[in-house]
Length: 260
Image 1 (cartoon, helix red, strand yellow):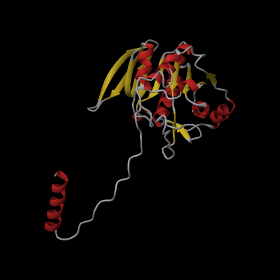
Image 2 (spheres, rainbow, N blue to C red):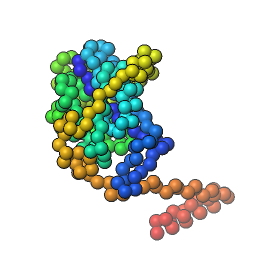
Image 3 (cartoon, one colour):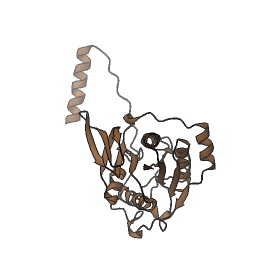
Image 4 (cartoon, rainbow, N blue to C red):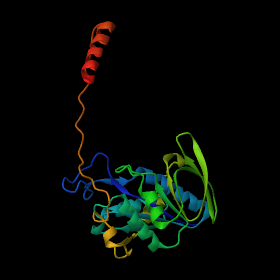
Protein backbone atom coordinates (compact mmCIF):
# COMPACT_ATOMS: atom_id res chain seq x y z
CA UNK A 1 0.00 0.00 0.00
CA UNK A 2 1.64 3.21 -1.19
CA UNK A 3 0.28 6.26 0.57
CA UNK A 4 1.02 9.91 -0.19
CA UNK A 5 0.15 12.46 2.46
CA UNK A 6 0.10 16.08 1.32
CA UNK A 7 1.00 18.54 4.06
CA UNK A 8 1.42 22.28 4.27
CA UNK A 9 3.56 24.48 6.46
CA UNK A 10 1.48 27.45 7.60
CA UNK A 11 2.42 30.61 9.48
CA UNK A 12 2.04 30.52 13.22
CA UNK A 13 -1.29 32.20 13.90
CA UNK A 14 0.44 34.73 16.15
CA UNK A 15 2.91 35.79 13.46
CA UNK A 16 1.03 36.49 10.23
CA UNK A 17 2.22 39.24 7.88
CA UNK A 18 0.80 40.36 4.54
CA UNK A 19 2.75 41.61 1.52
CA UNK A 20 1.01 44.93 0.69
CA UNK A 21 2.02 44.70 -2.98
CA UNK A 22 1.02 41.11 -3.86
CA UNK A 23 -1.65 40.71 -1.14
CA UNK A 24 -0.19 37.32 -0.24
CA UNK A 25 1.13 35.91 3.02
CA UNK A 26 4.80 36.56 3.73
CA UNK A 27 6.24 33.13 4.54
CA UNK A 28 10.00 33.67 4.38
CA UNK A 29 11.47 34.16 7.84
CA UNK A 30 8.10 33.63 9.56
CA UNK A 31 7.73 31.01 12.28
CA UNK A 32 5.73 28.17 10.77
CA UNK A 33 4.07 24.94 11.86
CA UNK A 34 2.47 21.96 10.14
CA UNK A 35 -1.11 22.75 9.27
CA UNK A 36 -3.07 21.29 12.23
CA UNK A 37 -5.48 19.28 10.04
CA UNK A 38 -2.55 17.72 8.20
CA UNK A 39 -1.36 16.15 11.45
CA UNK A 40 -4.46 13.94 11.37
CA UNK A 41 -3.71 13.00 7.76
CA UNK A 42 -0.16 12.00 8.72
CA UNK A 43 -1.42 9.89 11.62
CA UNK A 44 -4.02 8.13 9.48
CA UNK A 45 -1.45 7.42 6.77
CA UNK A 46 0.87 5.82 9.31
CA UNK A 47 -1.99 3.77 10.77
CA UNK A 48 -2.89 2.44 7.31
CA UNK A 49 0.75 1.47 6.78
CA UNK A 50 0.80 -0.32 10.12
CA UNK A 51 -2.31 -2.32 9.19
CA UNK A 52 -1.67 -2.98 5.51
CA UNK A 53 2.07 -2.56 5.04
CA UNK A 54 3.68 -0.40 2.39
CA UNK A 55 5.17 3.08 2.74
CA UNK A 56 4.12 6.65 3.41
CA UNK A 57 5.53 9.56 1.42
CA UNK A 58 5.07 13.09 2.77
CA UNK A 59 4.78 15.74 0.06
CA UNK A 60 4.72 19.51 0.40
CA UNK A 61 5.06 22.58 -1.81
CA UNK A 62 6.70 25.63 -0.30
CA UNK A 63 9.88 27.60 0.39
CA UNK A 64 13.08 25.86 1.53
CA UNK A 65 12.08 26.22 5.19
CA UNK A 66 9.18 23.81 4.54
CA UNK A 67 11.77 21.04 4.84
CA UNK A 68 11.27 21.37 8.61
CA UNK A 69 7.67 20.22 8.23
CA UNK A 70 8.81 17.20 6.23
CA UNK A 71 11.33 16.24 8.89
CA UNK A 72 8.59 16.43 11.48
CA UNK A 73 6.43 14.18 9.29
CA UNK A 74 9.26 11.64 9.17
CA UNK A 75 9.57 11.76 12.96
CA UNK A 76 5.86 10.86 13.12
CA UNK A 77 6.26 7.76 10.95
CA UNK A 78 6.48 8.80 7.29
CA UNK A 79 9.09 6.88 5.32
CA UNK A 80 10.03 9.38 2.61
CA UNK A 81 9.65 13.11 2.10
CA UNK A 82 9.59 15.35 -0.96
CA UNK A 83 9.79 19.14 -1.07
CA UNK A 84 8.57 20.83 -4.25
CA UNK A 85 10.14 24.27 -4.15
CA UNK A 86 10.73 26.90 -6.82
CA UNK A 87 10.33 30.67 -7.06
CA UNK A 88 8.02 29.99 -9.99
CA UNK A 89 5.42 28.72 -7.49
CA UNK A 90 5.22 32.03 -5.60
CA UNK A 91 1.72 33.44 -5.31
CA UNK A 92 -0.06 30.22 -6.32
CA UNK A 93 -3.78 30.07 -5.59
CA UNK A 94 -5.54 26.80 -4.80
CA UNK A 95 -5.82 25.90 -8.50
CA UNK A 96 -2.11 26.40 -9.22
CA UNK A 97 -1.16 24.70 -5.95
CA UNK A 98 -3.25 21.61 -6.67
CA UNK A 99 -1.86 21.48 -10.21
CA UNK A 100 1.72 21.63 -8.92
CA UNK A 101 1.15 18.93 -6.32
CA UNK A 102 -0.60 16.70 -8.85
CA UNK A 103 2.41 17.05 -11.19
CA UNK A 104 4.69 15.98 -8.34
CA UNK A 105 2.43 13.01 -7.59
CA UNK A 106 2.60 11.95 -11.23
CA UNK A 107 6.38 11.99 -10.93
CA UNK A 108 6.19 9.85 -7.76
CA UNK A 109 4.21 7.35 -9.81
CA UNK A 110 2.63 4.36 -8.10
CA UNK A 111 0.21 5.21 -5.27
CA UNK A 112 -2.98 3.82 -3.77
CA UNK A 113 -4.24 6.57 -1.48
CA UNK A 114 -3.60 10.31 -1.19
CA UNK A 115 -4.44 11.80 2.20
CA UNK A 116 -4.90 15.51 2.96
CA UNK A 117 -6.18 17.51 5.90
CA UNK A 118 -9.67 18.89 5.21
CA UNK A 119 -8.33 22.45 4.86
CA UNK A 120 -5.39 24.73 5.69
CA UNK A 121 -5.57 27.12 8.62
CA UNK A 122 -4.20 30.05 6.59
CA UNK A 123 -6.60 29.80 3.65
CA UNK A 124 -9.58 27.79 4.95
CA UNK A 125 -10.72 27.02 1.39
CA UNK A 126 -10.68 23.19 1.52
CA UNK A 127 -10.02 23.27 -2.24
CA UNK A 128 -6.50 21.89 -2.71
CA UNK A 129 -7.31 18.25 -1.90
CA UNK A 130 -10.29 18.08 -4.28
CA UNK A 131 -8.23 20.02 -6.84
CA UNK A 132 -5.51 17.38 -6.77
CA UNK A 133 -8.06 14.63 -7.40
CA UNK A 134 -9.51 16.60 -10.31
CA UNK A 135 -6.09 17.09 -11.93
CA UNK A 136 -5.29 13.38 -11.47
CA UNK A 137 -8.80 12.28 -12.50
CA UNK A 138 -9.25 9.98 -9.49
CA UNK A 139 -12.17 9.60 -7.03
CA UNK A 140 -12.26 11.75 -3.91
CA UNK A 141 -14.07 11.59 -0.58
CA UNK A 142 -13.94 14.67 1.64
CA UNK A 143 -14.48 15.15 5.38
CA UNK A 144 -13.61 11.54 6.19
CA UNK A 145 -14.05 10.76 9.90
CA UNK A 146 -13.30 7.02 9.79
CA UNK A 147 -11.78 4.47 7.43
CA UNK A 148 -13.84 1.32 8.02
CA UNK A 149 -12.24 -1.03 5.51
CA UNK A 150 -9.41 -0.90 3.05
CA UNK A 151 -8.15 -3.42 0.52
CA UNK A 152 -6.03 -3.49 -2.62
CA UNK A 153 -8.94 -2.25 -4.72
CA UNK A 154 -11.49 -0.55 -2.44
CA UNK A 155 -11.82 1.75 0.55
CA UNK A 156 -14.94 2.06 2.70
CA UNK A 157 -15.13 5.25 4.75
CA UNK A 158 -17.45 7.34 6.87
CA UNK A 159 -17.88 10.86 5.55
CA UNK A 160 -18.99 13.46 8.09
CA UNK A 161 -22.06 15.52 7.22
CA UNK A 162 -24.10 18.15 9.06
CA UNK A 163 -26.74 15.54 9.91
CA UNK A 164 -24.37 12.69 10.84
CA UNK A 165 -22.31 10.72 8.34
CA UNK A 166 -22.50 8.87 5.02
CA UNK A 167 -20.85 5.52 4.32
CA UNK A 168 -19.00 5.75 1.02
CA UNK A 169 -17.18 3.03 -0.90
CA UNK A 170 -14.59 4.15 -3.44
CA UNK A 171 -12.19 2.33 -5.74
CA UNK A 172 -8.45 2.85 -5.41
CA UNK A 173 -6.47 4.91 -6.18
CA UNK A 174 -8.39 7.71 -4.50
CA UNK A 175 -7.92 10.90 -2.51
CA UNK A 176 -9.32 11.37 1.00
CA UNK A 177 -9.46 14.56 3.05
CA UNK A 178 -9.78 13.92 6.78
CA UNK A 179 -11.26 15.74 9.75
CA UNK A 180 -9.93 15.86 13.30
CA UNK A 181 -12.49 13.30 14.51
CA UNK A 182 -10.64 10.55 12.63
CA UNK A 183 -7.86 9.97 15.18
CA UNK A 184 -5.55 11.38 17.82
CA UNK A 185 -2.10 12.19 16.38
CA UNK A 186 0.83 10.56 18.12
CA UNK A 187 3.88 12.30 19.51
CA UNK A 188 7.20 11.67 17.73
CA UNK A 189 9.25 8.86 19.21
CA UNK A 190 12.95 9.19 20.04
CA UNK A 191 13.72 6.76 17.21
CA UNK A 192 11.58 8.82 14.86
CA UNK A 193 13.29 12.07 15.84
CA UNK A 194 16.72 10.54 15.28
CA UNK A 195 15.65 9.26 11.86
CA UNK A 196 14.22 12.67 10.94
CA UNK A 197 17.44 14.38 11.94
CA UNK A 198 19.48 12.35 9.47
CA UNK A 199 16.83 12.23 6.74
CA UNK A 200 17.44 13.97 3.42
CA UNK A 201 14.12 14.94 1.80
CA UNK A 202 14.09 15.01 -1.98
CA UNK A 203 13.88 18.49 -3.51
CA UNK A 204 12.13 18.99 -6.82
CA UNK A 205 11.81 22.13 -8.92
CA UNK A 206 9.22 23.03 -11.54
CA UNK A 207 11.48 21.52 -14.21
CA UNK A 208 11.85 18.29 -12.23
CA UNK A 209 8.09 17.70 -12.15
CA UNK A 210 7.70 18.85 -15.79
CA UNK A 211 5.09 21.43 -14.85
CA UNK A 212 3.72 23.79 -17.49
CA UNK A 213 5.15 27.28 -16.76
CA UNK A 214 1.86 28.99 -17.62
CA UNK A 215 0.06 27.01 -14.90
CA UNK A 216 2.36 28.04 -12.04
CA UNK A 217 2.44 30.85 -9.48
CA UNK A 218 0.58 34.10 -9.92
CA UNK A 219 0.48 33.76 -13.72
CA UNK A 220 -1.17 30.35 -13.44
CA UNK A 221 -3.68 31.42 -10.79
CA UNK A 222 -7.16 32.28 -12.12
CA UNK A 223 -8.14 33.95 -8.84
CA UNK A 224 -6.77 37.28 -7.64
CA UNK A 225 -6.78 38.80 -4.17
CA UNK A 226 -7.70 42.42 -4.86
CA UNK A 227 -7.30 43.63 -1.29
CA UNK A 228 -6.48 42.09 2.06
CA UNK A 229 -6.32 43.83 5.41
CA UNK A 230 -6.60 43.33 9.13
CA UNK A 231 -10.07 44.33 10.35
CA UNK A 232 -10.29 47.17 12.82
CA UNK A 233 -10.49 46.14 16.42
CA UNK A 234 -14.02 46.33 17.76
CA UNK A 235 -14.78 48.74 20.55
CA UNK A 236 -16.00 47.47 23.88
CA UNK A 237 -19.70 47.41 24.65
CA UNK A 238 -21.51 50.09 26.61
CA UNK A 239 -22.55 49.37 30.19
CA UNK A 240 -26.10 50.29 31.16
CA UNK A 241 -27.33 50.86 34.69
CA UNK A 242 -30.64 51.51 36.32
CA UNK A 243 -33.88 49.61 36.65
CA UNK A 244 -34.88 46.89 34.20
CA UNK A 245 -37.48 49.20 32.68
CA UNK A 246 -34.97 52.04 32.22
CA UNK A 247 -32.36 49.76 30.65
CA UNK A 248 -34.96 48.23 28.32
CA UNK A 249 -36.17 51.69 27.28
CA UNK A 250 -32.61 52.91 26.61
CA UNK A 251 -31.73 49.79 24.66
CA UNK A 252 -34.89 50.16 22.56
CA UNK A 253 -33.94 53.71 21.63
CA UNK A 254 -30.42 52.61 20.67
CA UNK A 255 -31.80 49.87 18.42
CA UNK A 256 -34.16 52.33 16.77
CA UNK A 257 -31.26 54.65 16.00
CA UNK A 258 -29.30 51.74 14.47
CA UNK A 259 -32.20 50.78 12.21
CA UNK A 260 -32.75 54.36 11.09
